[in-house]
Image (cartoon, rainbow, N blue to C red; front, top):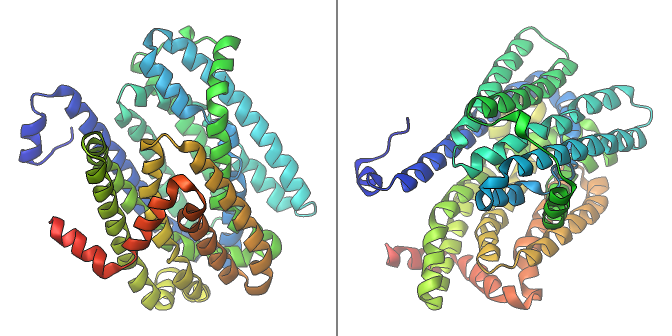
Length: 446
């Protein structure tokens, strides 16, 4: 049972559908908060225990496998949920087909992971082994077909129960491993085991909540229909995963695993704040969309204030972290991560463009311009790869941080100038960077 303030309860008391949606949002928020908070605490403990080199290898492998997650998912999530909502009579055919497609996608992605890691590190048997272990999580993601059904029914709390139960159990086991001075491979097995148990328990939860596994069925016609709609989303997802993960992979290849550890520690502190714009934008954007239906001028005024708020929040995060970066990293991660301070002082400024990008991303949905968003994410992946090739050999993890900022700036800010449809967004983002004017607009509205 989730409890709400009295004023909110009064508004939703006689609206069961609204109450169900609000309850669903709270469960998803709880899921995000627990994973971020708990993940950061345990992650810091693991980083201190393993040291930069082994922690770097762990992050290299997880980032490398992460490059193939979007391919394994085939971009099915949004399409399947849409069809489950619009065609409830065909739900078992949709789910059964999605299940088989995810099995095929997971296996294909795992094979690609194996081929690529043997090619990148042909003489490193240990890295090959742990990559194949973590790579199995791509196959275990088959259980996600169940989450599509729960989301379509606005019942995400059951997914949260399973995922967070397994997350907490795995976190406790990781702490026990640290206390017993376990080797790196033990942590690798826990990561794979958590994914396996999540898949099994999700399917079990689906069965006890009314889903009949024996009624699931696969049809080629449905598979063709799903894939015809999902492939653009898959390509967009691949661009995004490359855009987000390639820095750690390239650091491992162009520098060493210790450099990955130094960079990853800083990135974890820098990126932990990214949930803030996601929650705020998700909460306020429905009101902005309503304004669009009433008055285009009011719509863009509200969108401007959203960019203003994102700019201020990003600076509130970036400025203090820049000033205390090195002592903070030493206190939190230990003396071995002192170099991470310089990386954090640079990397945290990517938040300016990330926060604006979260707000701008909703504009693409509102205007039905998702293909433009795909183009820029693809450009971001290419830019990040090119910049890392130049900067990592020169500056190591600091070079990777610089590459991250520049590629984010290109994708979420500069590229708006070159798309006629998004030039208005560029002007609004540029105006939001005038913090004095931004504050005036926000204060006047209050």
